[in-house]
Image (tube, rainbow, N blue to C red; front, top):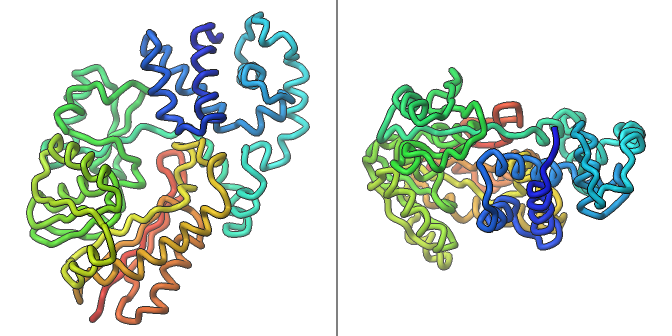
Length: 393
């Protein structure tokens, strides 16, 4: 295997955007691809290599003994048994030395798994021995999972349609509304996507909405809706019947949700921007079901967002814990007596998950925990936590 010069130059540009200009990896790739005339196969190489270097940036700077992005790219190529070209940028790299350095440092977890010191210490403090087992899963290349839009099509029908368009997909028994893409291709260019027949959504994330137990005809609030991925799933679960209120503090995300809703054929919803505490108070005791998919550290989805490990700061995690508790305390009052809420995160930290729920229940005896579910990062899923809580009175 060998990288071409145009591929290498594009990878370097992506790395500059992410590591030096603090752009998100997906946006950096988008920017580079706009100026790049290349085949889809080249784009796949550029994207996958860029993500892998971002994922293992600390390891690669260590074994290359350099901060130069070209040297880091060369070290990645050597480490992954690529044939190294004779470009001047790679002139000082020695393959034998690169391999020897890796053997020297691979026993040191924070280097091998490529994490900042503080994050490795935090993970071990919260998860103990489980942290060691979790890290390799967080460094896997994530599968591309699709959630079938059951408002429009069945899993079997979608599988046939995608195969007709040249996409290889398989259905997994444990995820009845999901399909997995067998090879990495741009699924967003498919007619099936343009027709709103599916959304790209991790298999673990797909379990949150069913956990809420929303039914057709109910009044359901998605209070941290963002661009509406879970709202779309809720509408399908409700069969477009009842009333779905999608809320967020950022109006632009709700505008994006409206576009997605039109494509998906969702029409039982309204959007509301959370402008002040009054936006929440107006809805006190009105919801049969409430979804609180709260902002979090995102440590459960590191394999999907590998640049997050370099952008996260300890003070942000402290701040987000306070935000989570405030949302849970204030927003839970929208649930009517007898109704239920689900608190969910894409984090694996106890301090963002079980501890937050316990703290809330200790303060609010009218709420009772029904069930908790932790989805550990694995070959098929990212990491998620969800707790279903019933309001008694």
